[in-house]
Amino acid sequence: MEKNFKLRGGQTLPVGGKTLVMGIINVTPDSFSDGGKFFSPEKTFAHAKKLAEDGADILDIGAESTRPEAVALSADEEFARLKKVLPALKDIGVPISIDTYKPEVAERALEMGAEIINDVHGLEDARMIEVAKKYDVPVVVVHSEKCSDCDIVEDVKTFFRQTAANCAARGFDTEKIIFDPGIGFGKTHEECLTILRRLDELKTLDGKEISLLIGVSRKSFIGWATGLELGERDAATGALCVCAINNGVNIVRVHNVEMISRMCQMTDRLRGDF
Image (cartoon, rainbow, N blue to C red):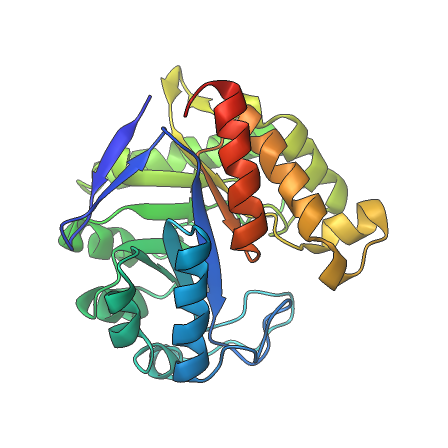
């Protein structure tokens, strides 16, 4: 079922039709895969433009690394990195997602043209719901909690259900939620594989189809499963994305947009979607 997300800039983001590719942009010196590569405004803009040309439907920009043991930033420090690059990114013509768990950073980024929130802390800070409601924007909600002695898929479903209830209670349209099971966040490598094997169980929540995103790009569980080094994991990432699409995922978040957008396009065609 296709949903058309109306964005603040006048664009429409159709979720549920062709697979959407979210290109990753890290304006950080310490992200696990590409920290420091795109830290200057000029490099960030050039990289974002290349991702758009390669097929990115969304550009997801983050200024604080979410890798394990990364140094946390204050809201002011995080936004100081973003404000240097956001004005130029608006001119590329691709919707901008702001990857942050801080409501004050999200709000300031939305004021500068971002149109989607990607909250890796899963709306843990309820103020983020108020920001999303105020600006009427889609929000990606990531499951990042550890699961002790439980069924990880059922735990994710419980989290999704509670998140929807919390948003509804605060008057935020739950149709604007895009759920992310949080591969690599607070999970063992085996739990990551379990979620990917059982993605079809997450596609509906209490009988209702939901919008689903996954981010597996170059993550450590791929190295654990295959022995591949960080720079060798794009093909394995693509294979996981293809499997995910076949199990109901609508959006894939990746570094190598050129390779994986082609894989998504072919998968969609084989499925008869496009």
